[in-house]
Image: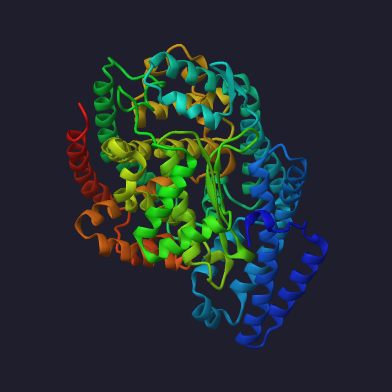
Length: 567
């Protein structure tokens, strides 16, 4: 069935809640593991019915945030989801306390029960109304960002479409584009501050109602982190400062030299070469056709997957008015179907967002027959290994997309992968600071962000010269994860360190690395993050020795790639 043919119907929430409660009663009254499993299967069927309609409403609202019908349906789920989570919390408590737990773990795996424990800690009936308000405020943020209409060069663009102008070889064009983009954020700066004030206040109140000191540990629990916490991520950030930040500074200095500049400004960072970045040598249809060839040649598994995605209309890739910014992959349970959402804008990122989100989608496709909805995707940092590693596994086919500029692509992609880790760490430390000190004012938060930019990205006073909104520390407001998914962003850094290991592995033994990756994708979410890392034969990113080993080897590869760049 094609995505356009899938029928949406708002769930009957009252009937659904009644049926789920009845089945939880049956589960709790079960006298045998078999009876308990029967009740769980029925509960999961209803949960997937609800999640299927949620995903349809979410996707279609993302595709056009102006559509009044799906805007209303998104608002319905903003209200309904916390009510369903209250029921799911009752189910989780019943799972944890079940006399059949050992037998159920043997059949379903222990990860569901570990997830149930952290999810139960981080939810209670007393925060349902708070969660509804948080959902509504997050929706406000996404709608405001999607509403951007930026006049530029006689045309009007959204934020995604403006990206290509920030890569122009003409410095004045880049500068004007960045000014126009952040002019939108500056114009609405008070609204963004107010939204974040509300979100920090509401999340902190929820945490304290549940007995947490602040939202930090609650945020970790809501990210389903079962085998590490704030202490481990703090040590990871320290390792990033020690090993990644110096290499990132080297990369930026080389970029400055190639551009012939005395110093880099905010409007220079997206341009890697004086004569222009690598860009796809064709339109979106060209990218999709080469994507089809790439996945056909990569493996039988990826061939079947990508053809299915094309035939079923499970990708929406073009940027257009009213469409939400960014990119994501989600999963529609009853169809056992991933869905890829992106915003092509004519840059190198069109190819990397396709391979990145296809990595997520391929993993979900490989684990689509898992017994539990919790196992369709792994926890987010493990899921990002699948996506970021896919970006590297597809390197062999990048000449299809970039032709004579393939060497430019290779260097840019690997260099940007390193530089991005430092930014990810800054975003993470920023969120820890905010939620540890929720009394921070908007000015305090912006000052903290500027402090972290200096530490992780060496962005001094001159970097934003002439742009007061950015000079004062407003750049973080463009990062939707900070509003939508607190504490998510370090997941990308953890995963990138694992993906870089795959990159080095595939230089030594490609078939062995690919078999490991296939095995990892097939496990879905049935293991915790560190268990999946171990199962894949990778080293934990929390061990400083991992970065100490990976970074010098990546530096050597970058130097080799740089030597091949056109002069």
